[in-house]
Image 1: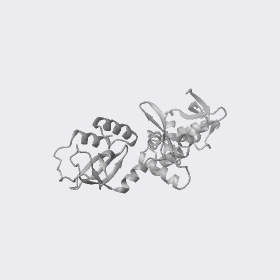
Image 2: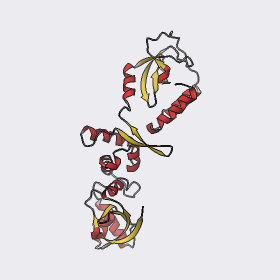
Image 3: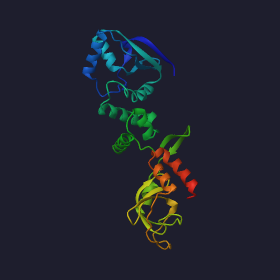
Image 4: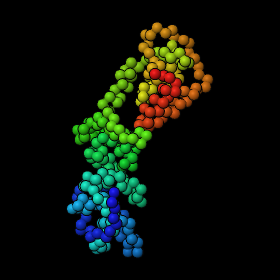
Length: 279
């Protein structure tokens, strides 16, 4: 992207395109900037997008307000070339590392804007969280709220990046297999290599990639693949409860894998299944 730093007449800046990243300006911060300027300090360049007609300010609203009070007609500004939509999308990512920390309202403004923006339509919660500099769980909660309110359409296809390649991933059935599998709740361990072979276990939590955390009869929590569990009415003879003295290599690896972010679970669990021939 072509970038230029110039002194621009402040009157040319457009501030009415929903590119203001903060909920509101901080009066004290503006006063501090005015005081610093009068002491000889100079501001770092603000940031605007030029679409061929207008300069859309996205970063530097406090600096611009301070210069207005100082009756300064020019502002040092970094110019990038792009559309108003490019400017909006970029605005959701600014102010993450500034001295004036973002308020919760500022973060909320960025999340909602990103979720409603068409650039964010096919991005995952993790990708939007990284762009806005917020927690993924917060993005997930806001996505659900906006979908329930009818403010955004449910996202059934997302862009994911794996091993440097970009893919489109259908999300229509994500979670459906988990729900169906959990409805049954209890299963019999059918893999003879496992210490709980033949016993009845209860599903506690369902992870991605057909990996399930189950509670055994003696209260232990143990990870299983779907292929290692069968119907409770299977003909296997229930064995006596076996106490596990030390976690196996398999257990240790699964325990690590299920702690990964959801975007990495599928690939990691596939490698585990291949390693332990669980298909």
